[in-house]
Length: 267
Image (cartoon, rainbow, N blue to C red):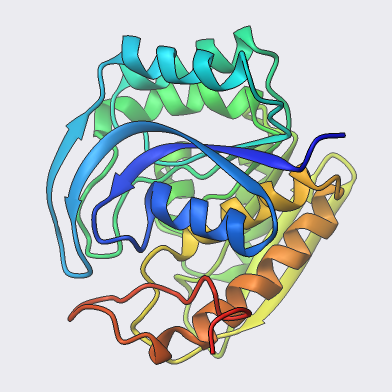
């Protein structure tokens, strides 16, 4: 087998903390070779998103074909896709190349609060991408949007929400409970075999830009290395927990700074 390789299909973050940049840093930190398909450009830093430019769908297709025609891709992470035309191009490309180990992070809003997914594109994500995903990693607001339901305010609701998301077609769901209050941040991992609640200690820091991108790409890295989904999720959660814990040592930007992707390497 060639060296474990993962492909990220997402938007670029000029501030370096999220999106394509976070994904490639995560792949590298975890020993996986990273490839990329850039679906959008953002003018972004730790404080705000000031512009989004979508890449033409035909050029997204060219990027996908270029990677798959030459490189063995062992896992795919899908992040920010803002419009239906982009989503369709990605779905068609992955089907054409029989992609596997697909991790979908349905990114909708940046840490700054700026919208990244256009409201009219939600149905395309739900109908085209969820059924082909091996794992989806929505947070609670993203789950609410995908299901068209009222806000989730209690951990006791997560089981039914996770089940509803699973019914939309993915093989597994990691429903992230970080938006709930409390010292613990509960995540629910659910698939056809059952459900498991994974608890993490909440870390007091504002430097959490790119946490969702980093977690999903860490899971994809584990799948690329041959891990089963539950092990890949557990290892990825350990990695992001440590990356958040070390985030304050970076002191990047004046807003929500990035997590420390290379906390295991940099002194």
